[in-house]
Image 1 (cartoon, rainbow, N blue to C red):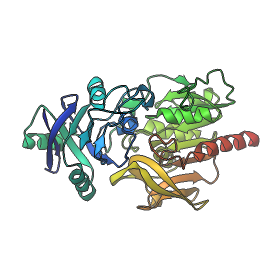
Image 2: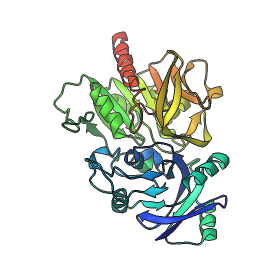
Image 3: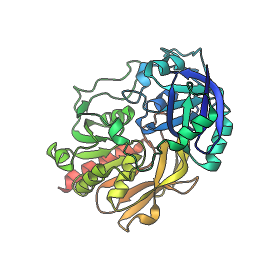
Image 4: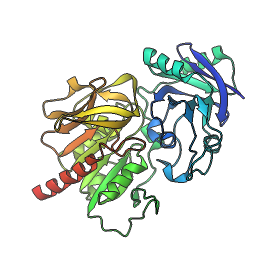
Length: 376
């Protein structure tokens, strides 16, 4: 079945439909990871986006129930050069095509993904439409021009959990899978804001000895403090941080009272709560190979990233230290407050998918919590 991807600037690409048939719109972005497509599909940070994979063959090791990063896929559509119809892996349970059909996710394959990615790099990420129903390019281009972009939209409410819950699953082990840590002693109580949180972040926190309670994005600071946590985690999530006023207000009220650690959107929201500003990147950072400099140690980390917005360094006050920078474009990759126990990074130390270079940040969070408890 034929399908078309059309961009708002008039460029379009013809290919074949796979996954679920249909028509969807979203901002067209690309991810440079060679593996980890299942974790990418289920990362809530992709809400409102049509994700293009730069690696030419996707789906060759199949799909399994253990590797999902949230309760469902949240992206708008999936774009690949070639979708492998016959996966081969001992953990595979179904093909990529079957999974997308079951989840209602529209896919398109057979297009020149190199040309698409080069176009995005030259002209910037923009709204597009993928359709296997309407095959008129001019009609789809017009629909793309009328569809909403990401700027100014609150996508967090669309992916956050409806109510609080406890997380007791640890990191994956080859012999046993994910261990149940509900009976294990975990002395530190963490409240994790769900702005679109990934499961492996929660697993990393429990593995570090934390009893984790996940709360909806709209939870107030007063409600969090009533839970008497030792620390608060600010999660990743989709879209523009500027309209997420309820989270910015809560973070501002928690500052100085309790240790805070933010990742990705949580990093941007912390910066805004501290008086900073954010801006939209031309085509964002999405992949598992972004080099980041830890300014304190001089160590370079290879990191996994997924974001289209960044913190404006000129907007940060003197009490904020820029702790990490991206070596490709010098964008802000981490901040730390000089007085309060609060820090954040733009990238993903939980490594799903991606390298493990930055996993030490979870231990840093634990140290800050213990230091804060001693100071009380």
